[in-house]
Image (cartoon, rainbow, N blue to C red; front, side, top):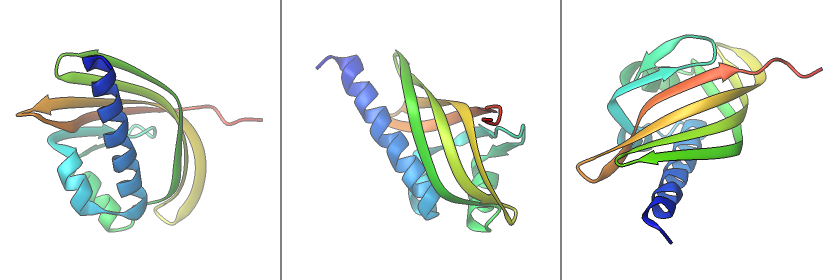
Length: 129
């Protein structure tokens, strides 16, 4: 296994942990996975910081019921890893249940030997049908 393969596998594991933590509202895990400088751009165009994202998850602004990923692609450049994917999300947002798809880019950075999520950019897919 090459160094890039090992990095890709590690980033996939971390991203799996992140999505599981989002669904479980596991704030402690997210505190460890998210970089303090996180910018989280939702498919709606709303941007959050680490603090506002965790607050929204904790207070029920976002209640994720499930997140499925496909079409994973990766770009690794030193201590920066880009993960591109297509997401299918089931959630309640501010009291309204929604199901939608999006393309997402997750930017992971390695600082002091630890990978953390630095940025997310998500763009909604048109409805099917």
